[in-house]
Image (tube, rainbow, N blue to C red; front, side, top):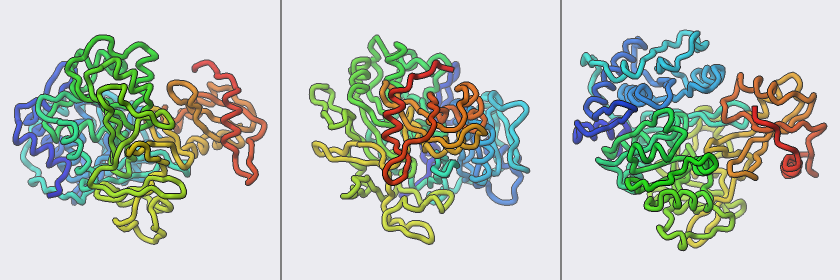
Length: 507
């Protein structure tokens, strides 16, 4: 029978009330105590919102930690959808997300709440809580019993949009619970397991971090500040059994010498997702933690985090060699149906994990097979992932994007959003953003026309509207953008030009 994310966690608390649910630096919280704190915070949210009816959307402005964990569950306890808000993002973007998502209240971690507070949409109440306050509340018993409704929205995420505005992706409990339950079983998640938490809440993989952990009865281990940038310390000191991150974390750790150099006997399962996992990256990780299995996970947010998986053999000599040097993404989950278009090789998927459509119905255009509108796409329609795949040795291999969308450090990036921000600058006439993948970690490169502008000035201006992961690493000034025979911007020519342009010094 279909259930909800909150019911999964509440069920664990009933079975394992004293088991550790959350391990923070210096403090461990059991499942019973976690749900007690959740109940108290949910009551407080309801009082502050002061609405006549149920709350439907709660903005969660918090980094990884106590407020984020308790707050996420408190919103779900009220039957509301969570709209994660990254404290590191510009206030203008956060404001826009709140308005477009219909957020009715913002719950904020007091340790990162800016002073003065951002200019939120008019009349939007805000509740701030310190980590101790989030964990220390006592419920009054004022809320009605929880009523599980799998058709309710669980969360709304925003990803980079082609029009220069982020696209809202609403995901229902009935979409995401099958993903969570599948992965609890696949990775043997249960009591005694100690799970990493590397993903920010605005990244859909954080849903795995939280709910595969709590749905299985494991412990979510939140890193302290030093461990966040040092996998060796995080894995070893905290005795993790399961690791999940973007593949870029391997390359960055290898570059800075923070891959484990000593055995990590507790680690038995490592998962990577959010971008292509190369064979070289997998080999680096295997050398560092040879006793851990390595899985490659693939899936867009529109298909509830992940829809395929591939496990590398324990013996690297048996690892497949693909045409593009990446680890296969494997097979589509058995609960889903897929097809690969014969003309483009595009992976298209339908089934219970497929979302119903974007927050703005206008964004649905072209994203579902045989859907021409009006109205929302029928559940029988396949979602077009925009990813090219091939079949090699019986496994799907990710070959790249069909459109110009990029992935940098696991973040989905529409160049159009960055290009729009650049074109709004007074000295920029036109702009195109591409990726330079020559190094271990791909970089964003902005090519622009108009008046030459110092790099530091461009970065300073873009920081007012773009989050850090959307800031180009390099800027190349051109007299004009190259065009192809059809009059379109010739991105291949731009890539050639940028490989010849020297990289500027870091800011």
